[in-house]
Image 1 (tube, one colour):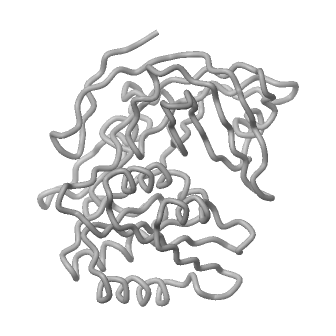
Image 2 (image 1 turned 45 degrees about the vertical axis):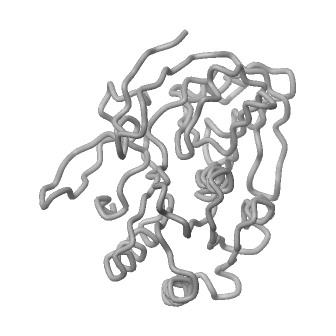
Length: 281
């Protein structure tokens, strides 16, 4: 099944694209550390025309006592048309993700997507800064791949509770990114140190754009730095969703635009928004 739908992008370089509902075969679904799992699907080419920051709506399986009702939105961790693969990195936190964790190689998983509007890299942006924490790094992994494809310089500041649950570090390094890690356990992930690290990066190489995901704490910090230095940025927002295609209005959030408060749907007009327009909640 396919749905032709115009997305509302950050700029006119994005084009309307089709949404597909397809059954994919599970290739693997294995732990990557004590908290996160990597799900790899054998996916048809038609659903792999994606943008970094987009997501899919997954129909979680019903298994024993696990009876998830709604689909679960899941940001894309990787899409590989050359291999026919679609990857998702997730943490088991509730009934839906617990059901996903029961999937075995050879099982079928129904997915709807790609959905939403993704990240944008302007041609004149050369030095990119990525800042994220925990599983938010999964959303930014495809952005790192696109930055490499466009021959951009990327610095990734990766934050987590401890070094054992830092995500995507080797992935970013293998793409040529300058990776800086901070954790709660070594007391380096506090806002003051993050500001110091970012200011040092701005002074050292310059930063043309900032990208982040989710965290209100990071949002406020990066908005402050962006305003101070005149650096544009984009944020991928997380929000509870039901339909995922803009019909139910479940994921509406407030944004400040041109001095006014506007309401937009994270699933449709986002999930990627202008960093300075997002309002922490």
